[in-house]
Image (cartoon, rainbow, N blue to C red; front, side, top):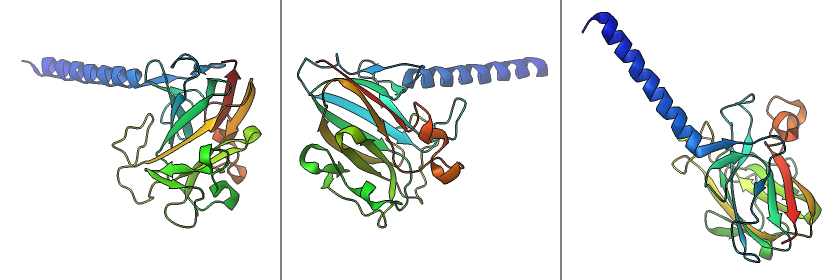
Length: 229
């Protein structure tokens, strides 16, 4: 084969490999859409508990803000990770939440954020071990919180070790990367729109850490769209 032919073949193989990577990523991730809502009302029989699975990542890795921290949610219908933070839930229903936390942590500015509040039993679990408060000056600190102020719900999401070598650098993250698994349950309130957010100032590079992803929909906050069950 001529030198030109070998070069063409090599380029072709690279393009094919790139195409396969794109397809693989597309099967795992569906981007959020403006005004989009992830519907959890039909994933189970009426009156049965809802399973809500999310992940927090140190850098989303794509789009117009690839370095921003973010939440993602697993679609109840397809199992894909979706970059959308408005979730429709049935009213007066038990919700079992699983958070896969891939980001590092630090001591909290306000130790109140280290307390578990508003969950069933007033507790959450960290990698299978129950806790009601986390001292962020020990261990790996707290990376984020999941809080719904209107219903008094707040759970600290403990960070992974800053010295971990297998840190996820691009969403969606898989369980092969360093992470903590935090689980808890809460009951949805009556019909309405309820803001949820992270209270840990994690907008790196922004004044006091409260800009950028902290104040942009589909990153570190969103809404629980609670509807009649």
